[in-house]
Length: 267
Image (cartoon, rainbow, N blue to C red; front, side, top):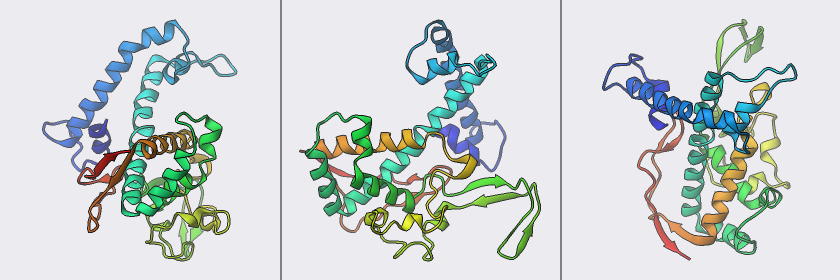
């Protein structure tokens, strides 16, 4: 999947070896072929997994997804449900390593709970959510979101006609001092009810996009990240050298450039 995602920003868009675009086409084809091989079994019997649900769901008019539509949805889910979540987890793990007081604070909360949590219990991991959101603020998995204007508008004194490519950059907005105190600092409590800096503007905090294009997997991704952090905190303690600063690659999906080396010990 990573090679397919990397191909999305290839400067030379030719399927010629050894270009990244060629590797991306191969990666996408591998995933699509694998899903086609599994498609018959998913069509034959309805099961609770997403793949099966896509094979059997119908609209109010009785229309169903074609085989190719199901395959394309599953290829996209592999990116949307994997790369963005691993990006957020990587940065959250980094910040918890750099700020061990926060790691211990969350660990104390997780240790007071059971190993397996219900969806409702995961939703109530308040301080885990603060850390997740602060990691998303400082290192959004999608630093830039391209859009096209559907109607004319005015912004910053400039008239923008319809049909123009326009971009929203969470990476910039998330560090705007008009909305965030000490915007470059790791400060999860800014998301507490008492401070609620993320509510200073409807789009001050938009790692999942907004409006009609709000990510449909937002809640799933949040639960996935909370659940993983909860399990890690109960089982291991991790750290980085005091002078270590994570080199970060922002495009196409944010991630540590060096793989984020950690020192890990079992609890």
